Image (cartoon, rainbow, N blue to C red):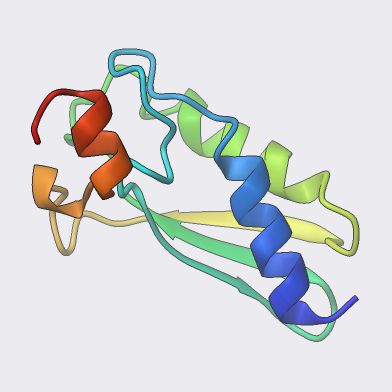
Length: 103
């Protein structure tokens, strides 16, 4: 399996994780900034939270790592949390905006 296909499969897995306060998955919310897989199958996910005081700040990154690690071809998964750039509603997909009534 090539790295791009593995990265795409990780995105599919991450779309099964929903923000507990917003009925939209974390990928469509725009919380996932980057998904990369190296030649050894190590996955690196850069993500943010809706706010630094997010109530799932500890559990959500762990869930992301666990879901990514289960993807075929992934040998390990590591999440890097960043607040640069800070999350805004503009980062949501059109689908998420429609679901939440912003369109």
